[in-house]
Image (cartoon, rainbow over all chains, first blue to last red; front, side, top):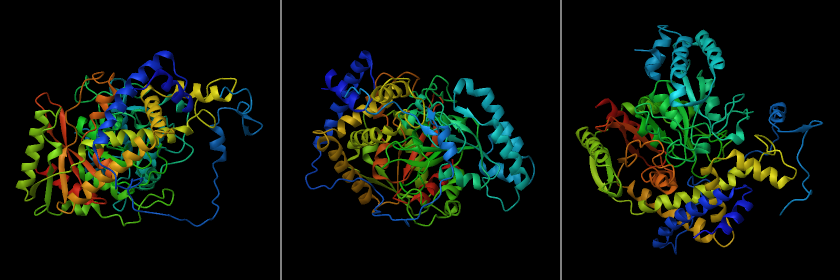
Amino acid sequence: MISLEEVKKIARLARIKLTPAEERRHAATMTAVLDYMKILNEVNTDDVEPTAQVTGLSNVMREDIAVPADNKKELMAQMPEVYAGELKVPGVFAEEQL
Amino acid sequence: MNLNELTIKTASAGLRKKEFSAVELTEACLAKIKKRNKTLNAFITVAEDEALADATAADKKINNNSNLLAGIPFGVKDAICVAGMRATGAAKILDNYTAPYEATVIKKIRSAGGIIIGKNNCDAFGHGASNENSMYGPVRNPVDETKVAGGSSGGSAAAVADHECIYAVAEDTGGSIRQPASFCGVAGLRPSYGRNSRYGIMPMASSLDTVGPMAKTVEDLALIMEVIAGHDPKDATTVTDAVPAYTEELEKSVKGMTVGVPVEYFNVKGIDPEVEKIIDAKIDALKKLGCKIVSVSLPHTKYAIAAYYILVPSEDSSNLGRLDGVRYGVRAKTKNLFDLYAESRAAGFPEEVKRRILIGTYALSAGYYDAYYKKAQKVRTLIKRDFDEVFKKVDALITPTSPFPAFGLGEKAGDPLALYLSDIFVSPAAVAGVPALSVPAGVTKAGLPVGAQLIGPRMGESVILRLGHHLEINQ
């Protein structure tokens, strides 16, 4: 059972503003989905290693050589706000409601 | 026959013989898009000017030594970046985004002379099995417009089935190529994880995402794979194994091959009896072609959905952290930084994306990590082991791609768990990282397409493409 309080807490951690109606819907659907996940408890995994990836590759290395990236103009063009050739954002240490 | 109805094989033959030009072929596809896009909504962006310019250039170059993809128009899923072209991923947070770089698979096709005709609609960031989670509207199934096209690559499947492009490049994390291919009646391949580069793909679940082709024939899939497969220094998870000559492998006989029929994929609750009948007929067809059919078991199949829908939202929630309105995309106007993140994400993501992020954030949060994420990773090991064991005995597996044909628009929209469960036959191969192909197998009495899924061992694309090709040419 996921409570409204839990949804609010998770939404805050995930940085998504939800309306009260959305909070109620997500509480209901998350409860249903997470309840379903309980079938995994039927599986004995005591001596089983977790799988994080399936390639069998490990420590893939490359030469440590700088490669020029010549698309600064294109990247800058995607920025929502630019001031004096730099990305502009609201103050990081301004009153943040944490 | 209209030019847009050709396959890669037949269109490229016509281009070489100068029976028609790449411009005419491209115009035929563009005309079909213009006629149908308002109804089917298979494209978010149509690149008419770019496509015609590329076709004009291709016409000057095409000769008998050209790659077979030269001059052929194709669609690109909108979650894949094409340099200089809009890429929304079907979410409004990227409504204004122009990709400053290009996916490796797209770069390879363009180097071969391929022509991008536009960007296909999809479920936002690949989240969905019906293409109803696009913020640009759902895609309708060209076979029956009251039905969904499937998802997440519904726009790609609909565009190929409706002859709005000759083929498409899409992405499959847990069935996003195979299920819509099955619903719309086209062929689609999820390659082995690591076979094709993921560079330039909007990431969803990085340990499961794959890029693959959708086309009108299995032979065309093989042609595309020969161009796009292979190691990429920009994607460290790609393998260095040589790329086989898939089109040559197709021609080999299937006589003597052993094909497994996993018991867990038949007689399950919710499967449409018509689907089973159609797949049974394909199993008989394989028998007639000289394959040995054996019954096998993949005992952890029923846990694949639960494992998948913990692993994927967890990786999703982490990957989608980059979309915050700070460096690119649509930024909400706010006074402080927290609101900038929270409001940009609130306005820019559809409900399903928010749900995945919330589930993932929950599963990865302190106190729940071991119970959900780590448990799912352990079950993943067992699912993978099932496939490792079974491929010691068989060359490939045959199953239905989906338990049912395309369902009605809106039919499952209010019930995310029901939609998740529709991935029952496509998610196990994804969790194990093995390749799987959906090939058109027949139609129901109502005329809806049904796909057969062929699953192969890791890097065994040749085997399943060959089986699929022989099923297709021996209808």
